[in-house]
Length: 382
Image (spheres, rainbow, N blue to C red):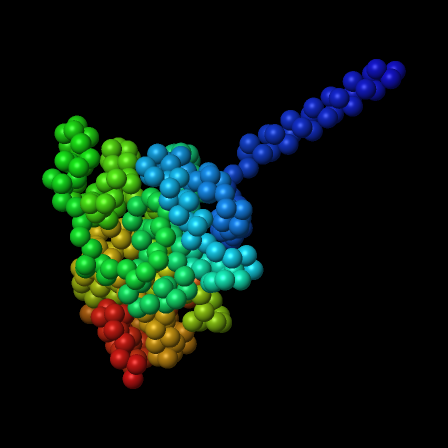
């Protein structure tokens, strides 16, 4: 009887353990909360810095990034040495992008930015993290990290570097402006990397160099052949489709209109002549296109750096955009127009105002000023 009881208990334990295994196997970062994933990653990064464990920091990176970065160990050591003092607190968040098909998530990307305070300094840490990639699991993990101090981050000329290519970036002094950066030429890249014609024959090298922001010194830190092999111009590190901002069925925000804004999108169509502008406040970039649809592929245009996106948001509030009502003209329209203005927040909520018909009739007088400000990227402050 005791043997039967013992056998029964063993079988139950095996079943329970098997059940846990199956459950864990089916669990996926594809379904975990964005905030949980983002906060977990910054805590892992801080833990590596606190323990001065450069090897553990490199283990946070995806296999793709490890293979792409030739000097990852050295870069991790530099990151660890730059982080000084005992950790006290952190604060920040991340934007989330994903691709899905038939309701199933194909891949997700998080772009985080956190302020980390120690007893010696305040650091600004940003990262690009792919927690889930069904098609290419070797890309799951960190793609890049950048660290600098609060003082350097607050300089007008500061630009993040991590969104261009895999790596660990330690920014110790002021950076060049975008226009001052000198990219390598296709001919120089071929020679410096020892590329064969088979490796680059099907790739637009000029676009490849521009997408990864490759300069002469990068040839010694990047695995150029691997990057060419994996190159996807329409995707690169993350999704660049933000058309969902202009669609329906999104929860609207009702308070704190200027707090924690991630992006501003604006589109106006008039007699098939379209104006589009998209502000990515996290990366301080501004994209604009005329007579085309920008939002499902930001790679259609080169994003220009824009340092004061928060000023745009505050101006939108000043013009009472958050009190505008969507509207439409019911009578026959001889001059059809439609407009959508959306503001995206870090918690995923979106404020959106939209109108169709004769916009001069359904929108307030401030509309023309807001439109001019968004399309020009300038705000007079008056």
